[in-house]
Amino acid sequence: MKSKYLLHPIQTAKAAKALFSIRLGMWKFANHGRRRFKDDPRYDLQNVTDGFADQIHRADDDTELLERICAAYSKAVEQQRSAPKAYMATDWWEQVCRQSLGPVTQALLTRDIPALRAMYRNFFRNSCSTGLLAAPFGMAKAYFSGNIKDSHRHFYLSHVLYRYDYWKEQTEARFPLGHLYGPGIGNPFGVRIDGTHIHVGAEYAHYCSHRIDSALAAGPATVAEIGGGYGSMAYYLLRDRPDLTYISFDVPESIALISYYLLSSFPNLKFLLYGEEALTRETLAKVDVALMPVFELAKMPAGSVDATFSSHSMSDLSTDALGEYLKNIDRMTKDDFLCIGKKQASESISDLIAKKHSSFQLVETRTSGWHSHKISGAGVGGAAGLAASTMFEQCFRRQRSHVPPQELVQESKRRAHA
Image (cartoon, rainbow, N blue to C red; front, side, top):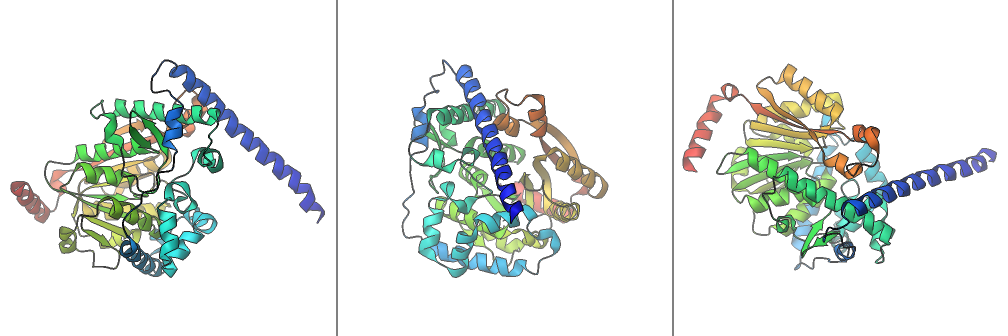
C-alpha cells in the first residue's frame, strides 16, 4: 500500500514533464512557422478554424453497405485465428485494439449498424481510427472542442504549410491545390485554403499515389497495397486513374474502415470483400477493388499485380514475417515494389531481397522528408531529431528476363489491347 502512494507523485511528475515537452515543441514549431510564413497570404488562422469545423457526410441509407462490412469482418476475424504466425497482428496493433478499438470491434461483430454508422461517419475524430489517425499531438479536446487556441492554430497551420510546400516540391508543382480535395467521408479535419479543404495527411497520400501512378505503364494496371490504412492513398489513385484495379491487404479492423471509406467514395465501382468470392485471377478480373485481410496474400495468383506498394506498415514486422511478406510480393508482382519505411527496416528489406529475391533490383533509394518535415522539418529538433525520424523510399524493379514466360505473353496481350 505504501509503494502505491510513493509511485503516484513520480508518475504524475513524468506525465507533467512529457506534457511540458510536447507543448514546448509545439510552441517552437509554431513560432518558427510564424516567422517563415509571416507575409504569406495563406497564413490566416481562420483557415484552421474552417478546416476543423464539423462536416459530417450525410450519406443515403448505408445499412446494406455496413452489413456487408460486418459480414466480411466477422469472417476475417474467425479465419485469422488459424492463420500462420507471420500474418498475426503485431504487438503494437494488439495493444491498439485492446485500448481503443473495443467499441468498433464490438459493433462489427454484433452487427450493431446504428453504433457502427455513428462511429464511421465521424472516424477522423474518434477512437475507431486509433493507430491510423489522431488529433495533433493527441490533443482531441484542444482541437475538436470548437474553440482552438491561437497557439494551437499557429502550430497546425505551420505544419500544413510546410507539408504543402514539400508536396509541391516533390511533385514538381504538377498539380493545383484543388487536387488535394477529398471525398469528405468520416468528418475529416485539416485546413481550408482558397476554398479547398486539405484534410490531415492529404499531401503525403496524394504524393504516394503520384509515385505509384508514375511507375505504371499506360493502360489498365493492377496495384496491391500492404497496409492501406483507411484508404486515403487509394482514394487518390482510384480517382485519378479510372483504369486501375486496386487490392489492399491489412489487419481486419483497418480493412473494415477502408471498406467504408472507399465504398462510400466510389459507389459505382465493383468491390470484393473477404469471404464473398475466392481470391483468384478470374475474380480479380471482374472487380475494381479487392479489400482483404493480410493472410490472403498467400493466395494471390502469381504475376497478378503490376506494382506493390507499402508505406510504413512493414517497418514493424519480425524478420520471419518480413521474409514471408517478401516471398508473396516476389511471387505476385510483375514490375515494381515501392516501399517507404524506417531506416532499419529498409535495410533489412534490401538485404532479404538481395539474398532471396534477386530478380528484383534496387533501382532507387531516397531519403524521405515527409516524416522529418512533420516532426522537425521547420528546424525544430536539430540533427538528433532529424536522424530519429529518417525514413527511406525504395523502388525495386523486376528484371525482365526473370518474368515468367506466361506472364510476358499476358502482358503483351494486355498492352496490345490497350
